[in-house]
Structure formats: structure tokens, C-alpha cells
Amino acid sequence: MAGTAGTPGTPRVLRAMNDRAALDLLLEHGQLSRTRIGKLTGLSKPTASQLLARLEAAGLVLATGTTEGRPGPNAQLYEVNPAAGHAAGLDVTPQRILAAVADITGRTVGRHELPTPGRRTGTPVVQQVTDALDGAVKAAGLARDDIHRLVIGTPGAFDPTTGRLRYASHLPGWHSPTLLDELAAALPMPFEYENDVNLVALAEQRLGAARGHADFVLLWNQEGLGAALVLGGRLHRGWSGGAGEVGFLPVPGTPLVRQVTKANSGGYQELAGSQAVPRLARELGIEDIPADPYTEAAAHLVARAAETDDEPHRHLLQTYATRLATGLASLVSVLDPELVVLSGTSLTSGGETLRALVQAELEELAASRPRLVLGDVREHPVLRGALESALAATRDEVFDTSR
Image (cartoon, rainbow, N blue to C red; front, side, top):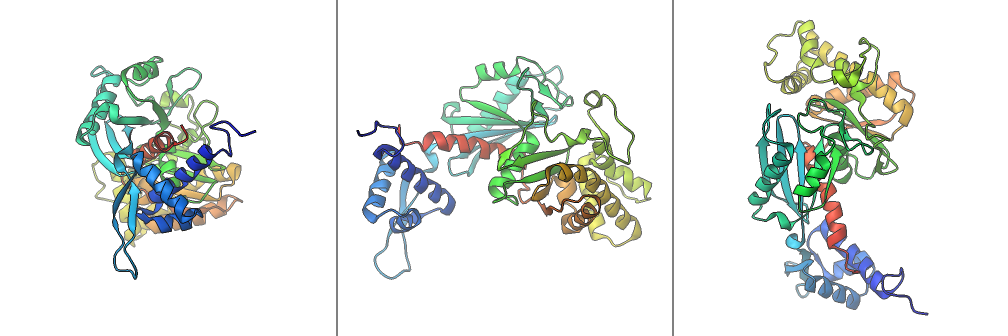
């Protein structure tokens, strides 16, 4: 008996699978000819032609020109229609909300930054979110209804049992137990929320240093010290969403921090967080310490130490590497990851010099020997991860031709 529409193996489902394979190839490679798509998918020329005609009629692909400079007749080229769908991402910090909109190919088409310093009793969070989103949507020349999905990245994590934001007491206004319901009522599109460091790991997994790796740890050091854990190709969030909050980790070299969530800090944060770098520089007698916020000061000092060959700067970089490896040793001893990605300006500013020092120290402190690499996604990695997450869901929705 013939299967019904939607049953695996039926012509409609097989066509949808071929359609999605072709669309994914166009996203990966850019413009492709019918012949090239046929070779990459294993489809015959007539089937590839029918597929492209179907996708073009559905508004999912565009004919964009022809091949030139090759023997024989020019071949028609196709690409994914950028206007087939749009997604948005938000990167939230205590100082600002950075919003962006991307078309379905992943190209950012609109961006807006909304400063939010000291708004403890000012504009409500829901309005901040909608204002930031509307700014990016306007910059893209679109309307809110054009956005298929939104992903919001914040420090900490929303507890799935209570709906409250945890591990981020420094983010004013975001701790109401009704906030997620209020956002759902105010936003016309589906939205998701994710820890900011998890989004950096997603960006590195999709676009950067962790591509092709199913088990890795990302260590982030910028405004705060945190980690993301990817196991079996999937983010591990933990029971309450707090997996990777390693800034609270007790470590040798600092006093125990009790009631860590009230202190919003812990041993590893105090030992190796960005605020520890200027403090260490002063102890070593290093002069000309920037008066910038500690995140910028740390990045500047680490970069200078990696380039300066005097005893105080060498000592600064070596001590910092040892401190970083101290916390990493606990992580890799438990998880045994294939790869550790170092991200955030307080790590990447040290370049290969700092990476090599941390690698050498870690090999002394842990039996597991993962490879350490620097993150590749440097420009707004949290926002890029939010966009990649939103785009993945948008593509699943828009590219589903089985309906």
C-alpha cells in the first residue's frame, strides 16, 4: 500500500530531503550551477533541474548569472534567495543591548546598539529589548513581522523550573519571574534565550575554531570568566542551566568564596578573571597600567606582555597562564574534551604566546591532554552565536518544502 504524504520514503518527503540538501549546499558554497548541484547531491540532471525549478518557484533560490571563462556554453548559476527569511539576535550586557538582523544566508543586514548604563529604575527590560530589536529591524529596512525568530543572549541562565535568571546578579532588571512571559506577550515572533558564553561556543562550532569537533570546552574571559561545554556535538546546559559557570569554581591560590551567588564571584574568577590582571601587574611593579574599565585594561596588559621581553611582563604572562590552567585542569580532568577554545579579549589578546604557555601549564596539571586553540570569531561573538542559533531554526522552518 502506498504511504501517505509525509511518511518517510514517500516522494514528497524524498523531494523535501533533496531540496534541503541542495539549499544547504548553496549556503555552504554560494553560487552553484545545476550540474554542480547534481554532482554534489548525486541527483540526475533532470532531477536537479526539477529541484531548482521548484525552489525558484517557491522563492527559495534565485538565478543569478552564468559561468564565464570556461570551455563550452555558459551555465546558469543559482543561489539562496537572501530575502527568503530573516532572524535576529540580541547580546545583553549591563552596559548595552546589541541587536542585529541577518538574512537567511547569514549576512548581517541591520545592527543597533542601545546603551543601558545604570537603568536600575529606568526603562523596563521588555521595552529595552523591543527598542533594541526595532532599531536593528529599522536599520535592515524591514518590519518586526519580517523576523522569523529571535535569540537573546545574556549572562547567567534562566532556570527552567522557575523562569528566573540565575548567576547574573549584575544584570539589573532581568530577574523578574514573569519576564519571559512579558517578553512573549510583547514580541510577535518566537524567541529563545541562551547563556552568552554558550552562544560564543555555538559561533565557534558553526563558523570558527571548533568546526568539526563534537567534544570541546570553550573558556571565555572578558566581562566575566565562564565556560561552555559541548558534549557529543550538543551544548550541555546542566539541570538549572548553570553548567559552565566556572567563575564560581573553588581553586587553589585564592581564599574560599562563600555565598558565591551573592558575591557574584568565586575562586577562579578572583584568580584569573579580567579584574585580576591589572591587580597582578601592580604587584609586579608594572607601570603605565591603563585606567580603562578592567576588561579593556586586561586585554591591553596581556597584549603588551605577549610582545614585551622584560622580566615583569614575562612574569605577568607566565603567572596569568598558570592561573588560567589551574581552573582548566579541573574542567578537563572531569570532561576529557578533545579541544579547548580560548575566547574573550583577556585571552585572545595574548595570541599564540599566551596559548602556548597555558597549554604547557595544563599538561603539567592535568592527565588529560586536550589541544588548546584561540577562538576565531572575534567580532561580537555572542551576537554572532545568537544569530546562528536563530538562523538554524529559521532555516528549518523556511526550507521545509514537505508541507
